[in-house]
Length: 439
Image (cartoon, rainbow, N blue to C red; front, side, top):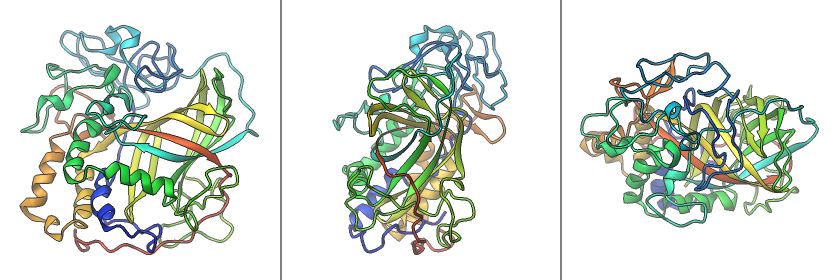
């Protein structure tokens, strides 16, 4: 996959950021069928100590719930579900969420029951203002364990290096690859990919956030029906929303308030293309491709509902880096009117897609990395972080004996409310692939 267009070619002046920090997110994330099972109450925010959400008997499309998604018993086999999510069993079942205390597994909060719909006239447009890649906690403290608090339990298990009921690791992999974070959080990206990135540039995520906060890019979550009052415990069905990408803010340095009208990038909008733009008069909200049609709020926490593809192109150092999160889950908590916190995006990355995208990105560092042993060494390291099974038809699982072909991912974010999305930015120029058309 060739790198996408620059958001603002003249504004992106740091070659160091352009080459090294892009490895922090130059990945196509394919999160398919997020989550098989943990029955019972869970924290919503998934920071250390968790968020405010929780509850048992979910109807949100996850195992251990009333949604038709089930987790297999410890007697063996895997269960099927209507959403393509299944939970495989182990010989003893000792690490299955179904056989553990409810508090042992962190899954997205379930949809509430017996509540009325929220008025759709209440709208909020939250622009991502900080992205957590797993190398720091939400206070900005760098720690090797920060990744453990970002993400959700994807496979319905709390695995350790000794767990045997897991997919077959790639040859040469350390069994530490299958070790979970807090409450069984699956986040091999944070645990294993970020350390690789940090060997190339220890300031990669810092530089990415510097660009984000300066206005080079953002992600907008436009929601209808959400109660953003601080500390609320609202539970309601019938919320909706969309996801949009923000282009470079004109002149940069956005004010980050309700007067900030951020132009929408011409991606994730029906009828538009990144390089061709949109037809005149296109409404980015009405024509958004990524829609949350079954979103809800539970104990204050927003959940996008049924897992959906989340195509999230971001700008890092002059590159458009697309995160194609399929069947992805996005959650966040109200912090105060005008801001949300404890944001989580969880899923998996298809290993070979990551490698293909990384090969194009690596060429920005040196064309010697486009082919040959230098890049193959990187590709091998990426392959060896695989800890999940991604099946285009069956979804995501951790089936014993089946070859691992995906990497679990957990990202965190905080966001600030800005003006509703109404303006679409013009198309940006195409960035040449340093590895050539076949790179």
